[in-house]
Each structure stands twice: as C-alpha cells, then as structure tokens.
Image 1 (cartoon, rainbow, N blue to C red):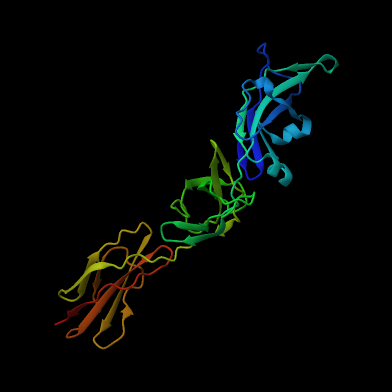
Image 2 (image 1 turned 90 degrees about the vertical axis):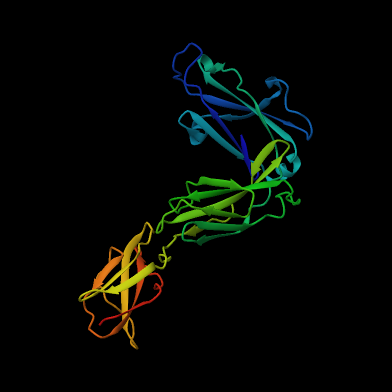
Length: 316
C-alpha cells in the first residue's frame, strides 16, 4: 500500500488455483475490507475487525488488473482528507466465486496492511533542468506547506522521475535525495527526456509522496568543445615542418585542425580534412621564413576547441 497526495494505492495478487488445486474457471470477485482508527490508536489486533468496503468485479476489476496482479487506487475528497488526516487505515482482501444459485465460495482473508494517513507536502516548485557536458542538472524549490495548510515539517526527501520517451509516461524513478539538486549522469545527447519530482514525507512510520511537480522536457545538445590540445612542438627537417602534440582523450573526439601564420600575417588552416592523429608534416613552407602554428581539437558534433599555445619555427 502506498499514499500519494490524497490517493491510496492498494496492490495485491489474485489466486490462480482453488483450494482443491484445480485452476479457477469461474469469474472472480474481489472484496476489499477497510477499517479506520483514530490518531494514536493501533490497527486491528485481528483481521476480523475489518469491515466490507468495496467490491471489484467485471469491467471495474478488469480495468485495475494487470495479469494476476491488481493495483487499485482510490482518492479521498478534500473533506474526507481533512476529516481522516492523522488516522490509521487498515485493509484486507478476500476473493470469491459464485456457483449454484449465486452461492458465494469465499477465500480466507488476506493479510491486512495498515498505513497512517499523512498530511503530505505540496509538490516541489520551480523545477529546472540544465544541459551540462556530463550530466543533466536538476534544481527545484522546497514546498513550504502541506496539502492541509500546515508547515511541511515532515518532509524528508525528494524522488526524481524520468520518462526516457520524452512523453508523460511511463516514468521511472532515477533517485531519492534529501537536497534540492540532482545530477543525472545517464543520458545521451539528442534524446528527449521528461522529468518530474515529488516530495516524500515520513510520519508515524508511514511514508507518503506528494503530487508530481510540473514536468520539464529537455533535449540535451552537445555544445561542449574538446579540451585544448597541449604539448605542441615544431621542428624543421630537410624540406618540411613536422608538428607533434599530446593526443586528446575525449571519447567523442573526431580529430584536429592545424593553423599556420607567417610573421605579421593572419592564421590559416593548412589541412583540408580533419587530422586523425596528433602528428602532421607541413611541406608547403618556403625557405627563410618564420612560421607560427596552433592546433585545435574537434568532436563528432563539430565543436572546436580553443587553439593551443603557439609555437614558432624558422626555415633556413
């Protein structure tokens, strides 16, 4: 059993076999039993203290059934919530089939579960998602009040949910933290994601979630250039200038560009195609000149780094 905002969610498995070991062939009915106890009072000492509350059958049962499992949500009205807040709810489940003359053949009562009705905080506000190089950074603001209008002193954590399809569902939990910031490291550039955050409250041994924050969509883009190449050196050999530098280590590295300028002139790129290795030979130099070289790195998204430190070489 779980609580989110004013909604309880009951989950249980349906039987597949009868007590004689044969597979059930008649339609099942589900009877949910409920008891409510005042604040400070413990739940029922025996399951017999539960009373009939709800019967699921036919289309209603099919709507909440997932194979042999039932997930049944029910929402308290605002008035019900105000009246019952702080009380303990206990639930049990019994299944039955109907035979001759609609005679009911009932199962034993399930285990009973109980939960304190928590005055949960309002949803977190101001959710923002920022595109970083190695993470999607989420920030939000803490709710100040509960849905009952009280200070949110029972707030203990936040849960972060993400839809990898970039649509309202299905959402998967990414983490639970106590702060107001979260960095999601598992993402890919160019994929659309939808995020939302809930506040978690703990009270009298029960845990409940707020409603979801307003969802925020993001499609991260790779706008982050590689590191500036380092260790560039240049030397003149018989008829060319040979350049070498330390290779970059980025996993999305595409290659390098080399820029050359003559003394007093502007820099020009000397390679027609991106260079795949950190070494190049420039045979287009003339004798008796001074040249300056710089190198940049490029990634697969086309981002180009700032130029390296400049090195100079003279041709005799």
